[in-house]
Image (cartoon, rainbow, N blue to C red; front, top):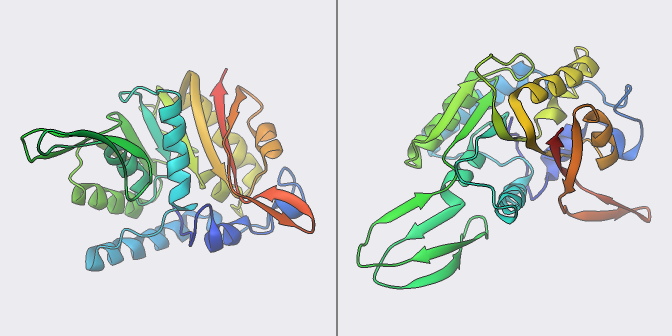
Amino acid sequence: MSGSADDDDGGAGAAALSGGGSPGGGSPGGDGFVPSALGTREHWDAVYERELQTFQEYGDTGEIWFGEESMTRLIRWMQKHKIPLDTSVLDIGTGNGVFLVELVAQTLEICMYKRKMSFCTSSRTKIPFLRVSCESFSNAKFGFSNITGIDYSPSAIQLSGSIIEKEGLSNIKLKVEDFLNPSTKLSGFHICIDKGTFDAISLNPDNAVEKRKQYVKSLSRVLKVKGFFLITSCNWTKEELLNEFSEGFELFEELPTPKFSFGGRPGNSVAALVFQKT
């Protein structure tokens, strides 16, 4: 699931998604979240049907959930820890698939012209990359080579497939999958990434508590032991996420996110954590 956010790390989209969640009041572990259409498949099917039509008519890929900074933050973490480019990566709720494109095309970009080598910065993500030059005037893009995007909305997968095709990328796997009931073939990943899908599940009007538990079970099944789970959330605080993923996972690292102050109390607009499967 990739929703619509108007600015870095959430904006209006994140505020809408929170639905009266825990950061300011009740605990989401009980009845802290108000059930919302944002937690239903019907809502996201309609969203991606519209976005697919918009892309087909105007070439607009749509918005990035939590903004571009959220993608940059995750890619920088992977670079910092020298994650091999052939590592198997699963994007849970891939939506329009823009993050998959970033993983492949922006992680490492090599542009060739004349004979010159320099470090440059991607104009889109601000991530440094190595520019290697030679006599050839061809361009080549290299990045993560074993990545999979899933979404339970067929329209989302169709949209992400169209965007990936437009970018000229062919080494990205896309599947229509309900993560709460994944197929047996969905397994063996070294890294799983969630930017908003767990948030949406938390708002499901039909027994969200049980669905959250099923999410954790599915995550444990598809992720390898010692594998990493990177989650970005606007509904859950660090402490609450630690509680939700306490069985079978341990906190590996907390990623820096924008801070704010309200009523003299500091806070974060989103929580971004890295868990490791035990």
